[in-house]
Length: 241
Image (cartoon, rainbow, N blue to C red; front, top):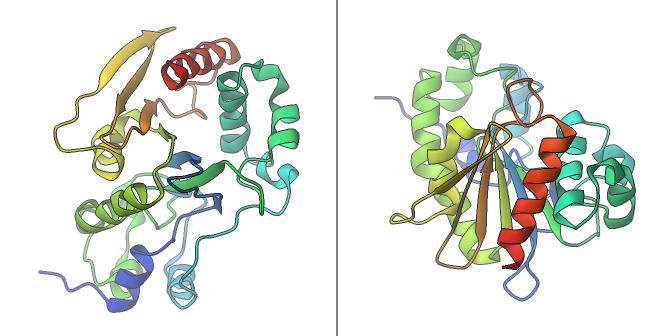
């Protein structure tokens, strides 16, 4: 049985994999976006350096709204939030400039990931001996299993502590993981089909609306503007009903 390193444990149970912004509070609720993991891809040496600079405080987010929409993942999310806010997806840049989601010292929006290590894709071959040495975990599956038991439970603690109004979860194949992080044991998902794409949702015991959507940056996901508009409109109905 593998023995996880203390440095990796502390890092993975902290605010690793988090872009940040305003995490909110029970009194002033925020809207969260959660992906799977950063996509750029860590090397084992980069991961080791990350562990040496473990974020103890909640990351403050991007410096500017322009930095936010420099990434395709983010500008697709801005389209969705523009629609949720009652506007057109075509106005996503204006929405990003006015509301400034995930930007330092701005309020109402927070961005994070389920898993802390960045991989270019989900291929288990991306795991190598260097990662094992840094983490103490022999395989990527061991890493995933450990995160599901420990990291996702930590995110659930954040959910209880900060009580988001809404969590947008991106990646349908990780629905069970999202429910571990944000849901409750007895919760059931409602699923609707819009433009041949699934929108799944539930409300946890705190009243947080949890939305699980297809990924928004691949051709089989939620990428068409017309569809994003419809999804945003429906989420708005659920949020304000």
